[in-house]
Image (tube, rainbow, N blue to C red; front, side, top):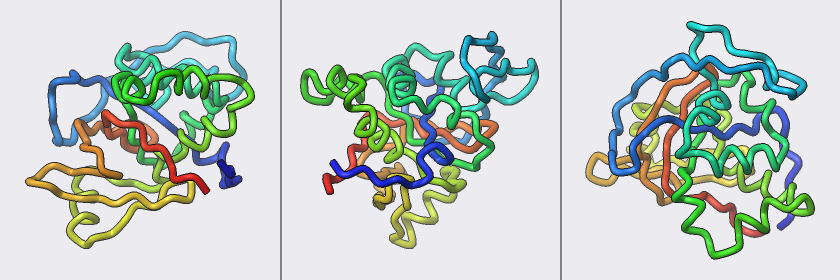
Length: 194
C-alpha cells in the first residue's frame, strides 16, 4: 500500500468506549471520568488525567478490555500522543471482535515493526477530522454525503431502518469524549489499496 503523509501525527486518533458487544444503542451519551497513572511515556499521552475531567479517546481505550487489540495497535503504530489531541475528531473504534474477523495472521503481521506505516494507514482510516455526533451522521446520510477520513478515503454514511452505518458497518454506540466523539463498530475499516 502506498501511504499518504496526511498530517499523520496531528490528526490520527483511534479510540474506544465501554459497551456490551450484544447491545446496540445509537443514543448519544457522555463518558465517565477516567483516572490514569503517569506512564513512562513522553509527550501528552504520558500526562496523568485530573480527576473530574472528561476522559479523552486514549484514556477510554486503555480502560476497557473490549479494546485491548486496538490499544496494542495504537502503541505499535506509535500514535498514542495523537489520541489526546484537542480535536474535534470522530473516531470509529473497532472492538476486539472486529480484529478477530480479519484473516488469520493479519493482526500479528500488522504489528511487526516493518509494517508500522501500513498499520498507521489502517488506523487513520477510522478517523474523521471533524465533529460528527450521531445526529450529524443522520443528516449526512439523509443528504447522501460521504465522510472524509484522515487516510484520504471517503466512507459512505447510510441510515438503514434508523441504524447508522459508516463504511458498511453499523455504529453500535456513541460516546462524547473530551476531544470529540467515539463511535463503536465491529469491523475494521481497511482502506482500498492504492
